[in-house]
Length: 335
Ligand code: NAI
Image 1 (cartoon, rainbow, N blue to C red):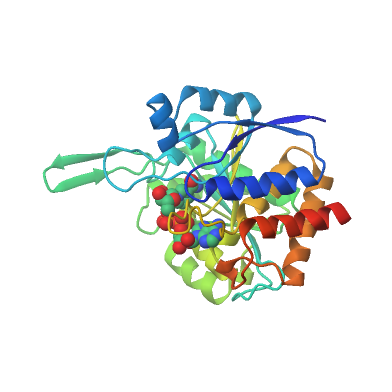
Image 2: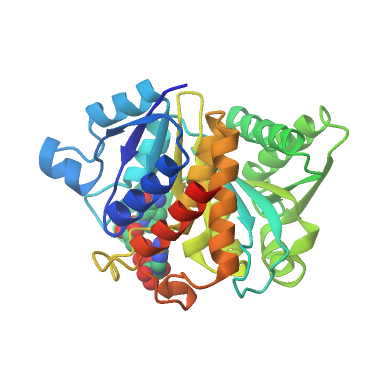
């Protein structure tokens, strides 16, 4: 079956890692037509808008997108494209598997957990204002609808992927109303999944537990800010940001992207590690039903890591981005 997928090369290392990822996807023989669109600073220059309607319309029409990182300058005058995009497509579930790769030195080589982050509200609702000079309010929004929807997604994910436990992460001891509502919705949904264990952890304790005994976790569900922070923490447990994939799933579409950003410090040098985006692409291939292609890509990627001779600089090797992609491509073609 032919698929049309929106491709957003992105900023910084984005074009380098998306090119490498498209190359290895195409090596699997899966029939994909790529429709390239732009967002962020490039779109601002061309259309006068960081989130142009043409790109959003293509992402809605094609339903599935593969996206490189988009740069968001810190400070005033440029709202986050990623936050805007998640809202425009109602990409409410951010799914970030945390699994170590073969042969990569890391703290927890056996770790295998999944973070499900609520992507549309919480402290990222964008509701900030100056009350009087020197005093700023930033509003956290938690709704029953979004909390129930994300809890249901986490339990459905656990059921579909034969996972045993879902843990809600919160700070309901302090934010009794907002995180309290999140937790209440979580336990209501849990009742419909009696075969899956449900428990909860307060965010600060959870950070310590993740560093000391991460094997106790399986699927973890949380609101936006906690998910943003914990997924980077978890990336550190398995070898770093260059290895952490992600999927943004919603009713109107799905966007697959790495957890890391545009890495301006190494952009244009051809040394970026495309592994995280390739792992996101594997999630994407599963999502569009191309399970065989997903498996072949995963096996080839893991085999290159097992060989250990073609590894990018961030992981201690000397391979360039395109040499790494070529090694995977050769494994796929030989399989
Ligand atoms: P970053 O993730 O771009 O970089 C952090 C460090 O990790 C840098 O030293 C970088 O060289 C390294 N790194 C990241 N990805 C790598 C890869 N694939 N291979 C090798 N090394 C890699 O985070 P930073 O510097 O905080 O953000 C840069 C820009 O990216 C910002 O404008 C930020 O807003 C944006 N960003 C975009 C995201 C997205 O589009 N989903 C997500 C996170 C940040």
